[in-house]
Image (cartoon, rainbow, N blue to C red):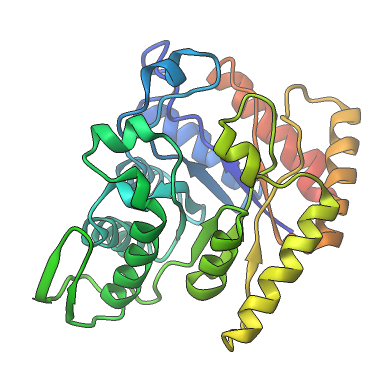
Length: 304
């Protein structure tokens, strides 16, 4: 089992507590010392203000710019976008940002992607919410072509490429983890992905996410089986990651918390999960770093 941990770079107050070079360096180095494999940040260029201020929302830095700073402050930590909403941007811009981080970090990017769910954010960005699935599929096609070094000639939903070539060509290309649990999302992950990153349905989510979230571990097993069937039908038999963490937030460095996390982790591993997400409480940077250090000692050391 490998681990990817939330990096709270979206926390804006107090100023500098999380959003500074010193903060990034301290947290990234703590994650590396704890032998946590990756860190993740999310993607909300212009979120809906009611969502943002309603108790369930959160701020977010630009994922590629933010992870570039993390790369500069670390040596082996993988850099995970969890997730980039592909319909928000030109696929060529996304491919360029990801390739830049991949090349300059020495091959440490994991591109987690999804279709998105906030209509207000799509509207603010001039993107078509109704076509978000088609935009995601098209973007994955363009990104794969661009990263291969291919000259792209195609008519897209919102672009015309008469013969365009983007560099750098990342070698190797970043793995792509595709999010979502709908039937279309499973097909997308099977066709384009190197991994699948579903999420549990939890109270407070939007209706869209409630419907498409994983309901239980039995449901997770069913979804993984369907996904593997789709991959086999496409002739895709290589390594493939399943990314999902226990339904708990690490709040206090207590033995019972470690025991519970490990027990839940074992259930996920039995279902086929290969990477676990981790969410640490972060009332302060010092508290976050303390929990990371404790997690390395009490959970990572016991999971290997």
